[in-house]
Length: 411
Image (cartoon, rainbow, N blue to C red):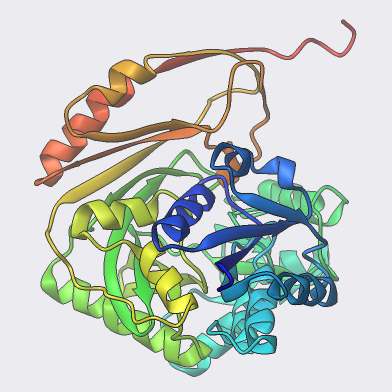
């Protein structure tokens, strides 16, 4: 009998190893198809098979999967939105070609176009910020004047806060527009910029699988004008009424966008008019959110996602109720990482679940105001929010690192 394989398209430094491990626990043989296997260190560490293929080429992926079918029983296909979110639509097309469970590619593509997403949500009466689409600097300036500063300016397609910035005045608006349109930002297609009202208030994120809200997290960010997560806590401190309100709006989003298969995460700001949808991401959230959900409720979203992918029934029943939190470790300067200290001490703090760094000494550090600025994280969990936050802070205080400035250009 042929070995059952799970095909993973591309990878992820956070969730990638968790998918490989979960697949192996389920008796599957994970195979990663990627343009560059060397970029995912965990593949070698886990002894996981990887094959080089152009993942931007659907026909090439079909040929490779067809070749693998001669040796393996392909139980399912999934993957990661890297380097861009539309790859998840490609995964949906692959699943349909091979008659395997997967997301609706048309719904994913509509959702990845943030302007189209905004239009569909608005038509369905979902509360969203005021927005305009712009193609050049004049249109950006006009849109910002109509909406009123401050505004959020971001590409209409993208992932991980890439190109997203809070513009508080005319000079910041002009600077960021020049950055996006002046050749520094990489566009997949013709440049299209979204200018949006800055919805102010606490941030929440609803995590769904299928048409069920598994739970809601709260989070905060590092200093503006960028939106790099600083800390995430699960579950969010909400009243029953607030939870129901966010959950109801989340389900309205899924219906409006034609989603409802597999995991989705929906970002909110709680404003004066209640929960306002910032963005719907038609995929599992990046690490460590799935770990926090498992620690909080005993629901392993990655394991359950794989079960859906291979045609099994998933189990989203909550087994307990704890508080879990993650603190992202983000450098405050650019340069070369000299050393990291205190990780073992932090990991030994009772209640600390994981201390992880994505970088090693001698790594160049260049901050770009995106999720990749995070060089590591600490996760803690306990029965109460106050206790979890105290554990997390104690662990973070034990960790330190040194970054040496880059040499001057004339040296």
